[in-house]
Image (tube, rainbow, N blue to C red; front, top):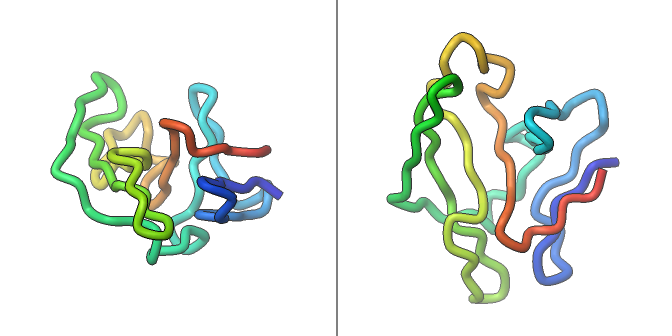
Length: 96
């Protein structure tokens, strides 16, 4: 079962049927992510074919991993399958 962990804390977990794999990243459905470990971030980046990404800070026991989760609130048509999904990086361990 795909799992995202940081500081030995599970941030997200979903079945293989629920996730989306894209460009080597695992995107978790929003409802499989524990919202208590996410904090809104002002960070945004632009991908030419996916659109504008928004970020969350991942927070565990008061420790913050800035911008460690991202999502596309309005992905372009080419990436519509990741609408409503969140991916992780920056030290968040994602196990397939």
